[in-house]
Length: 167
Image (cartoon, rainbow, N blue to C red):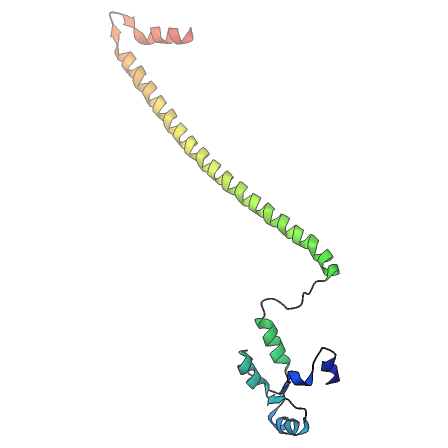
């Protein structure tokens, strides 16, 4: 009780004692402890049910270690801050490197996307250009065929047209 008195405990505050023990030790402990309190002697499975912690199958129910582990696993944030300056100095460069890596990865993904889009546009333009070149060649052949058919009174349109192109 003197240990608890250091933290401001007074006997009028009341005391609840929870003991994790196996079934054989529970009766003995209830007889030995004579401090005015609310005494609860239970095994680990009973306390786990009371706290809403899933322990799974335990071979020995007299130890509270699985309860501590299960309770800590349920906590989203620790009550006491667990800051370590040395650890922070070591992990800060790693965090920065991870951030830079993510930014570089995002930049590479964006560049890859832009390259893909540009390549598709280039391929479409190349296909359209080859189609237009074939169409121009076809029209040129058709034009020459029409000119070769037009010879009027000794006047050769193809000859005149070729002379104009050379000039």
